[in-house]
Every structure is written in C-alpha cells, then in structure tokens.
Amino acid sequence: MASKPISSPVPVAWYPSLAVLMLSIGLVVTASFFIYEATSSRRNRSLSKEIITGAVASVFLGFGSLFLLLATGVYV
Amino acid sequence: MDRRTLVLLFLLLVSSSLGSSSSSSPDIRVLSAERRIDLTSSIVRVFLTLKVENVGASQASDVLLAFPPTDAEHLAILKASTAEGKRKKKIYVPLSVNPTELPDTPNGAHLFSISLRNPLKTGEAAVLEVLYIITHCLEPFPAEISQSETQFVYYHDSAMLLSPYHVMEQITYIKTPSNKVESYTRVDPTNRAGTELRYGLYHDLPPFSYSPIIVHFENNNPFAVVEELVREVEISHWGNLQVREYYKLKHAGARHKGVFSRVEYQSRPSISGVSSFKHLLARLPPRVHSVYYRDEIGNISSSHLRIGSQKSELEIEPRYPLFGGWKATFVIGYGLPLQDFLFKSPDGKHYLNFSFGCPLLETVVDELTIKVVLPEGSKNPSSAVPFPVNQQLETTYAYLDVVGRTTMVLKKRNIVPEHNIPFQVYYDFNPIFMLAEPLMLVSAVFLFFVACIAYLHIDLSIRKS
Image 1 (cartoon, each protein chain N blue to C red):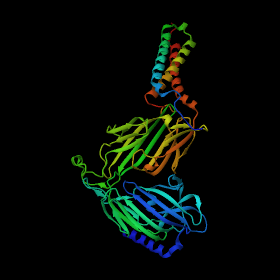
Image 2 (spheres, helix red, strand yellow; image 1 turned 45 degrees about the vertical axis):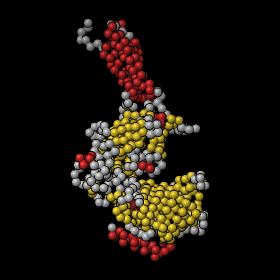
Image 3 (cartoon, rainbow over the protein chains, first blue to last red; image 1 turned 90 degrees about the horizontal axis):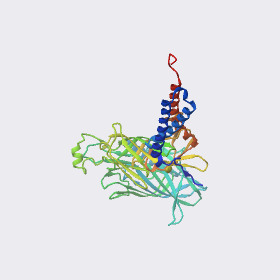
Image 4 (cartoon, chains in turn brown, orange; image 1 turned 135 degrees about the vertical axis):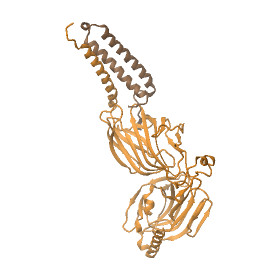
C-alpha cells in the first residue's frame, strides 16, 4: 500500500470565500445580539437567549477569523 | 612546501624499500586504475575506475581506499558502485563506504572501506567505480588580485593513486576549465593536450606511493561558498509548507585588492571582474508561491522567478557583484503546497519528504542547519537521512501556539550540490489537534460576549431607580 499525500481538510481554494461568508454571518448574529440587548428592558431579558446568540456568533466569528488568517497566508 | 615535498619523497623511498612487507592488505591487487579529475568548476570531482583482483588465499569482502589527510578533511562525498549485467543492460549498484582504521597506515592517511556485495574469491577480479568530491582544495595563487586580473589557482594532488595495494597500471587525466595552464609538475610520462592533462601510464607501483604534483591554471568559475545556511521548514496541516532560508554568502576565490571601479566593471565586462559573479541560480520545487528575497535593509527587487511544471528557477542578483573575499547576507522564503511533500505511511505515521542541501546551483555550504517545525501536538519525531547528520530536538513558538512546536534540527558540514537528495522526517499527529486553533479563537470571542452580558446584567447604580 503506497503512502497517500496529505492535504488540508478543507480545499485551499475555498479559504477566502469561507472567510468572507463566516465572518459576515458572524457579524449579522452579533448585530442581532446587540439589537436584542438594546431593545429589551431589564425585566424581559432572558439569559439563555443571550448566551445562545453569543455562542453562535462567537463560533462563526472564530472560524471566520481562522479562515481569514489562512487566506492571507498566515498558515497557523 | 619544500619540507612537505621532502617528507613525501622520503615516504616514497621508504615504501619502495620495504617492498611488499608493509602493505596492509596483501591479498588484493589493483590491476588497473583510471582517475579522471574534473577541475572545471570550483568543486573538484574525481571519477576513479578500479579493477581489483584477489590474489590472496581467502575471500575478500571489502576493498580499501586511501586519502591523504588534507583531502580527507575536505571530502564532501565518497560514493562507490559496481556495474552489474551485460554490456547493454549495465546497471550501477551503489555500495556502502565506511571509514576504517588500520594500525600501519603511513603518514596519517585516512582509509575508507568499500563493502562488496558478493565477496571476491581467489583469482577473481571486479571493477569498481568511485566518485569523490573535495571542496576548498583549489588554492588561489596569487592570493590577491585586482579587478582587471584573471584568477589562477593551484591544485595539489599526487601523480600516482594513493592506495594500500600494489597498483599494476594506472593513468590520471586532469581536465582544466580553459587552455590557460600556467605550469604543472612533470612526472614522466606526462602530456598535455588543450584542456586535458595526462599523467601516466605508470606500471607496477608499491602500496602508498605518492608523488606530489601542483597544477597552476586559470579558473574563473564563480567560487560561491555559503558559510552558513539555516533552512526552516514549517509544516502546517492547513495546506502549506513555508520554507525560510537564511544565507551568508561569500566569494572564496582570490581576494580583491585595490579599488572597485564601477565604470570599468560595466564598460569592459570581458576584462574587468572576470572571476566575480553577480547572478546566482536557485532551483526550487515546482508549484512554489509567495517567493520573497530580502536582506536586513529590505526587499531586493533584482530577481527573476520562472515557475515550471518540473522545477522553478529563481535567479537572484545581490545588491552588488561579489569579488574575492566579499560577503552578502540575505533571506529567501517561499511557500509550497502540502500535498507534494507530506504523506501518510501505511503504518499511520505522517512523514515529510523534502530535499536536503542548498537550492543554489554549484555552491558549497560550509555549515548547513535544517529545522523542520512540526505542527503543535505531534509526538515521536524521527528522521531518515541518507548520510550522517547531527540531530537534535528543540521547541519553536509560532502563531496560536500554547505548548510550542517540536522542531527537528539536522546539522551537517561541507555540503555540495550532490547532497540534494530527499530525506524524511516521521512523526505521529492526531488531526483532532488541528481543531485547537479555531477553538482558541472561538473561546476568545465568546469570552468577549460573556463580558458584555455580565456588564449588562450587573446593577451598578447607587440608588434603586
């Protein structure tokens, strides 16, 4: 059995598009988080909704910034 | 010079008077030896064809080669092979060569032993092809030249092959780069025709016979020597291999004396600065990207890159032409696609297949250090290099690192272009560790959101509103 070449789990050509897509989704969810904070009053806020929105936003922003780093040539 | 000649002539007399009783391996005899010394570059390459015969009582499993101490110090490569098969289907099988010691070798000669694949029986003969490469042995004379002079060098060697066995017949051919040979020692029969000098045919010489000769000839080839080269290869499983090479380049020919006149250099290129060089060619792998060439001042824009399907060529031009004794320091960096170099072996280990040596053509490297930076979380690194190197492990820190990356450091001295053969570095790596980097970023951003939520929930007012 010959050795097989290893390449990245995500095709390298997708890095810039993935970065833009994930960062934009992350920023939209962040915007919705801050809008929720601004428009709801102290009594109506639900902690679980805040935390879930924050978690989803941070996942998209985290992966988006990773793909941004990879797309610009900083192969971490 | 005189004393050395006297000592070696004395040696010749002593060995011839002692006769066959002083030879170290009395059961092998060299029937014919043909040496072709190639002096057309700054690196000396010698091709030796030996026909040996076993005249002893027992089988011989190895053949010894001897070198004088100065040559053995600068020996970069010593390869031996034997031809197998008939006329048209000859294939050359490489044989392993190892340094050995014997108690009665005269005058500090170094011995190397070639292990034969099939032991030579009594009365049998075998033909061996040996290639050896010696660096730093062409001595510039005169040692200092001005800009408009051409470079002459001395080549010190022996007219007879230094061998621990009797040599029945031998001949030596020396090829110089041009017709201009200032002088050469005559050891009859000697003949010179154009660029080829012939010493031979010598018959029936005792073991360890040595007759020093000096050839003084013109050699204007670029004497490019990289004093120190550090190559860093960083492996990232996200799809890229980043290579950074730090060079300290020097012109090791006749030192430049007097002034450097740029006007004369540019107006008369065939007379002025014939031994200097201004371009260097580096051979890089195909599919290379993001190549940069800079030094401490900044980017050096005088370079050309030609990317091809089999290889890429980078032609660099340092900021100034290099004359004798001048130095230049620079950095070359480039990126390579990961799938060309990183593989997974059937037993689960990942390995990097990369070429050792210096990408610059026809340059000698005095000290080469290759650092292979493995991804974070890799374990059990080991390397497989075809020739002996110094190995160490250290830790490097790069972007988004917590524990640091294991680095395999390989060091070797006296490298020539023939050392550009692939080597492997093996390691264990679980791909789950690649997730550590995005998770670190995700948790950092999440911490920011948690801080926002905490701030908005904390009531810092002094009075209840």
